[in-house]
Image (cartoon, rainbow, N blue to C red; front, side, top):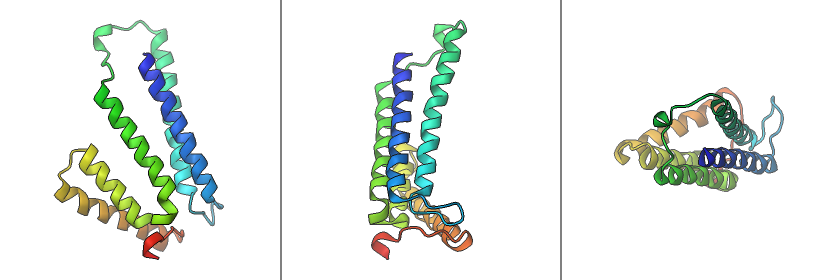
Length: 152
C-alpha cells in the first residue's frame, strides 16, 4: 500500500509539474488556445488520475481485503511508469522548440514500440500517421495554432 501511495503522489506531482510548464508556454483562451493549453490539460488529467488512485486506496483500506488478491508493484512496473513520466516531462519541455508534429511522432513511436510492445516496423508509421492526423485535426478543422518547431 505504501508503494502505491507513493506512486500516486508521484503522478500528482508529475501532472502538476507538466501543467506548470505548460502554463509557462501560454494557455491562451478557449476560442484562441495557446501552445500550452493541451499540455496543461493533460497535466491536470495526470494529477487527477493520481488523486483518484489515492482516493481508491483509502476506500479499499476501509474495506476488509483478501491479501492474496492484491498484485504487488514490481520494480519493472515502477521503472516503466518512471520512464513514461520522464518522457512526458521531456515532451513538455521540448514542445515549442522541436514542434508538435516531430516531437509527437517520436514520443508516440517510443510509447508504442518501447512500452506497448508493438513491433517497431508498425510503431513508427502508426505514430507518424496519428501525429499527422492530430496535427491536421487541430490546425485545419479546429483552427488551433500548434508550434511548428524545426519544421517551421
